[in-house]
Length: 164
Image (cartoon, helix red, strand yellow):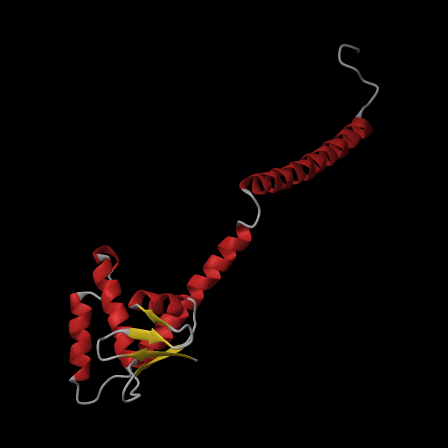
């Protein structure tokens, strides 16, 4: 696991890459699903949770239109901390978020699968399917018409209109 050290001057140092990093760099590690641990450079105390919360705060402030946590929701979270018997909120949120992310990934995978061909390939495939459908339909219609014609031949008599 990658170790990030936080120094007293608030700077974050990536021990694997031997360079200073920003919260944005850590956010990219999260998006790339690369695990890391943030520790205090002096004491070794685990600061990962605090840094993750800082990343969320930055995200929330970066773009006011895509807020995940409304003021009401944040106030409700604070109330949960003050409950005599706290709800299993963390587990519920983790499971719900995991389910949502899995569904989103599944939808993205299905979309990628559907779009693996160029739009022209998709149009060609659809046209070919339509042709097969219509050929089958016309073939069945022709077979039905032939059966009807065969039945009419059997019903013909020598009596022709106009003859007495």
